[in-house]
Every structure is written in structure tokens, then in C-alpha cells.
Length: 499
Image (cartoon, rainbow, N blue to C red; front, side, top):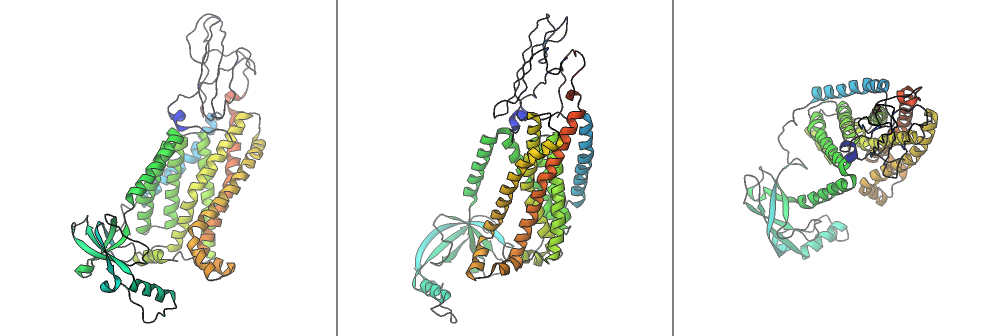
């Protein structure tokens, strides 16, 4: 696979000047070195133009001079791409411009204007929260605070009974917590932490507290989590610095595209679903907007990117059709845990199976972008290395690269979903459930359908994108004026090739 264009050279460094068209096919009127450079993708072009009278000396644009004027031009081009003819630019634009307009119109029509308001239930995530800090911490006897008692129905031989006995005979922590935000800022309350609790508090630790206005005053506030904003922000900063240092301008634009993607997700997709719009339609429109913005922002407004966009679009449509069919056929409701149950209870009009399908589409988009861009770049680089290759030869060469990509990507998806569902798989393993019983349960069946539908779309994206790229770059070569040798001397500056 050839080198890709780095964003700093794509957007900052001027585009390389092509050599002038020569009288003979091999360019004997001057010497031109246009071969691919080292692994970083540098391409050096030198032309010695010997002019008669007042012809331009070289492609670097020097003024006319004597008959032996020597023009030397040096430029750096990363990831050279085949030129794109005017005809193919029109064909690509005829497909992508209506698509982009349809996405824009869809976003305008479905734009929610914010999430709908509702009264908080105080259940799960639907609670009022404030920030707090642990001001003091003292050790107390668990009996004195009545924090743990042996349940009357729990025998000491059971895990619950043994845990309750240990807590009753052990020492608890009595934490004084001060509310630091909200209307009750400065108010303090007491939180008892049992010795077997998974979350232990420390003095000076920042915490998240839940507020229940209908509860008695002494029970209105309680600690529900710790404040992790600092380590999370630091980790995000390290990630951003690493991306920019390694990717340079391309990495910077990738971060901008990431921010835009989260903006589309939080400002459009989620509120539109909550407003009652069809989750599948919202997901398709939102994912298409993310795809257009992210790909063109990072990889440039080029034919190579446009082919990747087309390949991604075809694969997303396939994922949508397969997902819709198999979710209905397998009778997957999308309501399988406490969170989805809470969503359905708060907004009963939301189509939960449609929400599941929307998650499949959005979850597959990121990996699809990677596959389609890689395959398109592979075809372009193969064509640059051997311009005489036809569409079939290009497809056969690039599809060999794609097969390696398929194997790694499918394995990545399966392991990613398995890792996310690892606690659930452990529970099934503890219960000695058979693989058939595990796969048949709706909670696991959802992940299986999600994984397999997304993987089928990824597998299909490789031949689809490779075929589109091979057809575009081969058709462009035969239709481009630069593709055939000139029949006579051409004087003047070399024309800049458009991509």
C-alpha cells in the first residue's frame, strides 16, 4: 500500500507542478524524474527545457531566456494520485452533490431544536446531580450506624449472609460531604461507607452527589459516584497531542472531524430520536453527514475521497437493509436492560428495535471509513506505480490487499464486542449455559446480529470500493488529455493536472 497524503503537505505545501507535455512519449526533449520517492512519498521532478527563441524554459515557470535556458523545479508531493478528467469530475459530482443536498435537507427537516423536557424520575441516570467534596472521614463501628444487619432470610452459609456478618462485625467509614455546586452549595451531609463497598471514599476526594427533593432533608443527598474529570481530561489531552504529533495537520483535522462527529451525534441524532423521529432515518441522515464531513475534512476534496464516500454509502445501505431484515426476523425488541427499559418508560413512542438498528449503522461507520479510504488509496497507488494497468489488473492487485484488511477488521469487531460483553459472558459461564442457550438469549443475540451485520457490510465494502476506484482511475486515464503522447512539440507552461 502506498503512502498517504499527510494533511500538512496537502493543505500547506503547494501542489507539485507536473512536467510539460513532450514531443516524444519518453520525453527526450528534456529529462523528467516523476517516479515515486522514498517511503514518505516524496516525488522529485526536474525538467531541462531547451527552447527555440522565446519558449518557456521549464515547468517551474521561469521567464523566457536564451536557447539553453535551464529550468529547475523541485516539489514534494505526498501520495501522488492519478489526474481526474473533467468528465469524471462531472460524473462524481452528479452523484455526490444530490446526495449531500439530500443529507442537508434531511437534517433541516428532522432538526429537533433540543431534547424534550421532562420531570426527572429519580431512577438510574434520570436524577438531579451536583458536585461535592469529602471534607472529613472517620472510622466507626458498623453497629453504631446500623449500616449492616444479617438478613433474617439469609443463612450464614450463603454469600449474602457472610458478607452481612463481616460488615456487622467490621468498621465502617463515616464521611462528611460538602455540596459544592447548585442552590444548596455549602450544605453538608453524612455518607456511611461499608467495608465491603466497591467504592471507598477518601478525604479531599471530589464526588458526584444525587439530589432527591421529595426525600426527607437528611436523605436528600447521597454519593453516587466519584469525580473523574481530571484524569479523563488528561487522558484526552495525551490522545490529542499524540494524534497531532504523529499525524501533524492530518491528525489535527482528524480531531476536528471527531469533534464535529460528536456534535452531530449530541445535537442532532440523540435529540431527534427523543423527539419521536424514526431512529433509522435519523441514523442514516446523521451518519451520512458525519461521513461527508469527516472524510472530506481529513482527506481533502479529491476524487479519491469521493470514491471512498461512494463505497461507504453503498456499504451503509447494505448494513441498513440486512439489519432491518434480521432484527425483525429474530424478534429483537431492543429493550434488554435497565437503561433501555428506562428509555422506553420515559419515551414510550420511541421504536426500540429501530434504535437498535440505528446503533448498528452508527457503530459500523467508523470502521467502514477506514476500510474504504484504505482500499481507494491502494488502487490509486497501484495505478501510480504502473499506469498501464487496466481496471481488472488493478482490482485483482488491490483486492489482495483488501483480503488482509478483511481478516484483521472482522477479528477486531468480534473481539471488541466480546470485550464489551465480557461480564455478561462470565455470568453465562458461571451458570454452565450451553453456547446455544447463550446465543439464543435476546441480550446476546442483539450483539451477534450487530457484529455479523456490521461485518458483512465491512466485507462487502472491500470489493465494492475497490471496483469503483479501479473503474474511476482507469477510465480517467484513457479520457485524460495527458494520457496520450502529443504528436508535436508543445510550447508554453505545463498545465496543472487536477485530481
